[in-house]
Length: 517
Image (cartoon, rainbow, N blue to C red; front, top):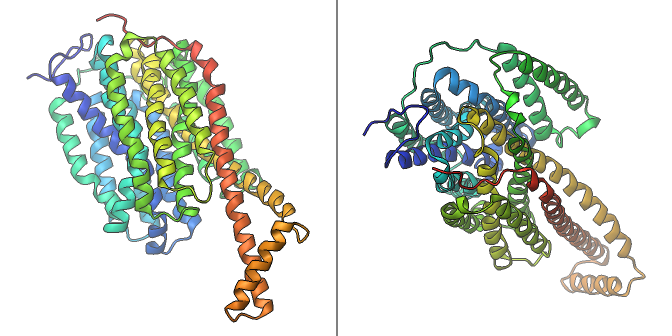
């Protein structure tokens, strides 16, 4: 079985499916590590003696480095060869993971997480472009479905796996677990990915483009990741980042449009399907990562779930995504993909509106089916959107297009989490004011509840003053809990409305269906 293939032809036989599995495994490693650390933050904090703001850089450092590399992946793959670059990224990612696990202080962990993010940045976009370049259009649906199983299930698998490993073996194992899978992915890449064809002339390195994109995207991702911690524009640090990021972004556009061999090819945005699809990808990122951020917070802070319980709460949704992804892959090239995207947007809105009915008594049974349905309907957008955005691009422009597409989804997820976190605090403060205004001694229900609690505490031998203090503390805690629940419900409704408002963008996309063999 030969792995060599002319770049103008598509891979034939069983080899092409092995390429899908190889690319999907590499991308899945990167996606899972985006969220696997979230449930281990408390353990890392206590183990390394760090504050919560300091340990936050374990997450932020990875995401910032990751996002910087995504748009550069097309150029890096062209300069070094897509197989060489993919294998190099896997090796670096695996080694950085091991170094993260052996870190003895926070500084080491943050540095190695940044390295992990840099090496992992190209795995997702490059893996997707490899598949588009490997399969003919009429087979893209099933191929992208197999690839997408890991990508879309990863955000749910990460917390599940991370919670189990943290509770059972310790936080270091969330990094050590990458070693066996990384080795398998490296070997499969070496065996199955097509050989890199020699380039007659290597392109000139666009150093200024690399610098401008690193600084501008780095500033944006830092603002999104750390804005809440620094109180947004009340912080000079955030203001400086906005200024530097804005200037370097303008310089980036100027540099990339005037150079013959740009590090980031902005010219691919001339394709209407890519421009519209990238915008919609940002919305999808917000819808994909936003609820997966809110649900675990609700489960742990309101329902009292452990990290492992929270992870298993999300697992059925990941399984649902995988099943629907494979089924959809078999039929997606027969229909206009925009129909599935619209159904997915409407279905996601319905699920989010149903999640808005949560109460402090909501349990696993009440969350199970909405989360399973969410996993399925999200796929209705994810797979057809990839095909509608990238499927009509010329083969030579797919790597750059894939970089943009995946970048917007990652940034959409970061933007969504930043916005939703800020909104959550604002809505909680709002509901606290409203609820407190209704809790007065003149309200019959309130008076009755105060009387009952006071009587109960005094019957336990507690003096009148202490009983009153305990009663007021319980009332205050009840108000805070109810305000939090109402705030989470507001967030679900807001994301649902965003999905509904995004539907008009669908008309700017390509059909994403079969174009021939």
